[in-house]
Structure formats: C-alpha cells, structure tokens
Length: 244
Image 1 (spheres, rainbow, N blue to C red):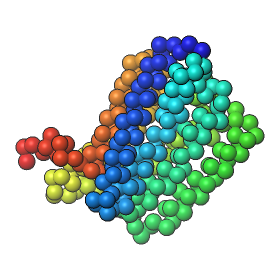
Image 2: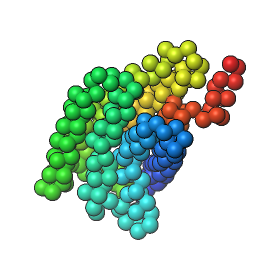
Image 3: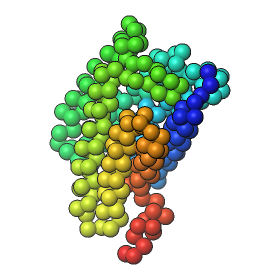
Image 4: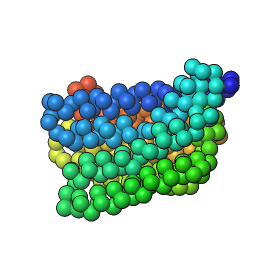
C-alpha cells in the first residue's frame, strides 16, 4: 500500500511528537535519584501514558513504512490495545500524583472512583476486542483510527480529568510568592491548555493539513511546557526569569 502525502505528513508529525514525549517522560523520571520524590516518577509515567493514542498511530506508520503495507489496518486489535489500553492506568497514576499534592484528605475516594472506572473500561475493551473488534473502532488508514463512542467517551473523560486537575494544581502554584514556583504554575497551565486545544484540533485535522500541523505543534509545545512545569531546567528558568 502506497502512503499518501497526507498520511506521510500525519505519520511524521505523530512520530516526532511521540519521540519528544518519550524523551520528556524519561527525562522527568531520571530526576528521581536526585530528588527522591515519587511524584517525579509518577508524572513522568503520566506523560508517557497520556500520549498512547499517538503511539498507536506512529507505530502503525512505521510498520507501513517498513513493510510497504497498511500498518495495523490488517491487525486492528494491536492498534486499539496500544492506543486505548494504557489510558485507565494513566488516569490512575495521574490521580495518585495529583492527590499526593492536593486533596490528600479525599485521596482514597478519588482513587477508588478512578480505579473502578478504569477496571470497567479495561474489561469492556478486551471483551469487545474478543467478541468483535469492530465494536471498538475502525483503523481507517495506516495512521488513523476511528473509535466508537465507548472509547471516545473515556478519552474525553480523561482529557477533562487531566485538564481540571491540572488547572487546579497550576493555580495553586500561581499563588506562590516564589518566582520559580509561580513560573512552574504558568508552564503547567500552558501545558494542559496546549494539550487539550491540540487534541481538539487533532479531531478536526481532517479538514486541512494546516490544522494538523498546528495541532501537532501545540502537542509538542505541551510536552516541553509539562517538563518545565515539573522540573524547570536551568535554561528555562534563565529564559523566563532573566529580568528577576
């Protein structure tokens, strides 16, 4: 199967986003030996997991390039497992990290709700894959899949969950009188907003390649902002606090 220019553009940008996200995720995790703070590991894992939908797209694209075939079009369950199965795990890890920092008194009930919801999703996902994977979605091209309402609704739930909790955490950081902590809050706020807006534009990317490029640039930006919001490397601190 010959990839179209649009599919190549989509696949390349997907691959770039995934490579950057993996680098950011593991870079955050690598800070644990020095900080001894488990939140560092958790947020690194969260970023690795939250981009799982693009893992499916980019890996299918690579398979298509290497084999000259249709990627995961001939093996839709692979696409769906890579793209959807990590989502509940990501949601749970994120809420562990979030409740370590805020709402500690409500930690058990929050994790219980998220955990039960995630288990129900995983059971339903794999059950549907065994019965008929078309009930989960359709791999429409080597780089795209159209999920049914079941998966799409959980993706929307996860985006809302991360957005709301992320904004709450960012706002707490913005209350600080310490310039570095306030900058982290601004970067986190930018990261969550960039990710959500980029994800929304991703849905509309079929309209034009320009929207696709803007969407992926926003998503790449969100990775860098997320990294700065939790780690704040020296170069970023100098860049934004040079006048302080």
